[in-house]
Image 1 (cartoon, helix red, strand yellow):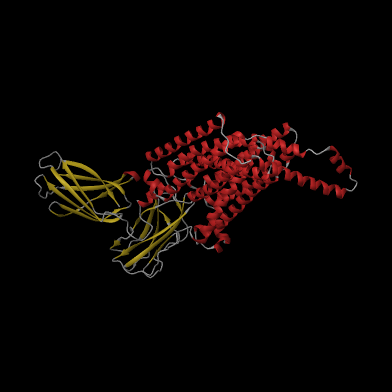
Image 2 (cartoon, one colour):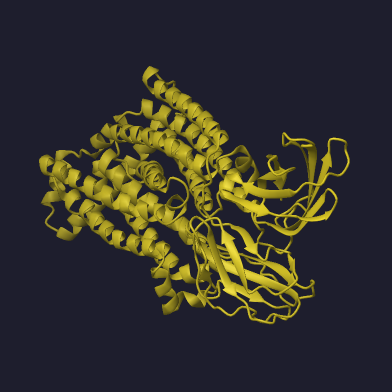
Length: 638
């Protein structure tokens, strides 16, 4: 008999349609929220400015080099190095000085006195508040640019073979968490009989082993991952101690401690709980295991939330518990899916009631995932440009597409579930009934060795019958195929999620694009030309201000101002002042007082613009002792 998809009745189809409608509404809401935007968020710190600026040429040697960042960072010895044209150290400090004030994050290193002219390279490396290493380099020149023997680093922090192994361990940790938490929840909530099934026990234990091993690997590789990039430094005790003093290191150690409690939970679940036969005692133990296991699972999920993207940026107090809920929902859905797959293929005893219970759990998990995913997407992306123009946004689009595929396959699984019955199970139980005479003959056999051999043969024959009957059931065969397809998509989805956790969020990538680039090339930009009419209200108080800013990028710029009277001729005024403000970043106003060059012409050189953005330029013109006006206009710089 060939297996064909059954025609669902009213009850099975109602839920899929509701799920599809909910998914469509949630997807629409996601993109609506993305368009709404929000205030600045931080995750993966970005270099927003430096003094001297990237590519700047200064007349005299500065006393220090300072770097500004978009969020708090962790620095150590040699986090900022300044190298002269021959490659020798030009700075005097091994550990950068913290020059931060208020919301401004700034670090600096002092330079040797009497530095010769030439091009200097600034190489920096730090750890952002979301635990990811960041690095970059840029150049500035004293006197005039020169040749330099310093080669800018081609490998980013966290890259290379160490980075590859660390990312693999990160994926294994997520996979282990999903199997451990999802498998345990499947046994307690959906199929309590699974506590005695060896395949289910193996699945959960392997999840625990994978998570424990991956956590140990990440803890050992944390020092080279954020530093040298050499495997040998994994066993540097001083480096390991420094890791333990950081937020990610503390999170990994906490995870290991919680995994010790998880081992005790597993021992009780598949030991004492599995052997209990009294229903009242088993119910009480189920409640205790659910509460204890929930606390441990929440704690393990919190080790990610408290040390990665959710722990920094806007609304961190909301983002961390939301991230915990997201991880738990992922585990309940995907881990339960893996458990169902194992149960369908390896254990013939799972009944339709257990499958339906998991279907309800999966539906609830999808609702939680959609709600928390909307919030996370808004927080980490925040705009259409970041969604479509950054790697994080593009990966997020791919993730949403994979979830849509997974839900489509799950819809077919729900159709099979709607027609699933326990007729095959009943047939299996009937097939296990043995004629009384045969049973008595085995028991009466005086040879114990022969009796044991006959018992093994009988068990093998019964297992073969069970498998044949199970495989002949079209509903179960169809369900197994659709669940297998779900699991295959879930594996790819989990890998994509792991990539997202190690990718710079779209919102921050756009912020970084507005700051000083990490490469040595100057920031892109173009000359800015503005024309603003003014009227101070007094006699001869009308005119026009023309402003040119060149080269119109971050760093050092030349600013020229011309004032023309109402007759179009150059016009002198007693006082002229300018101020630059980047309101989106709360930078400024930065005052600029130009010098008079000629009638109606003022100029200011080396005007420092710390980062790209939509700058508001305020111009104050005074035409007499009492007649004055301030006008403004916005201009994109950088």
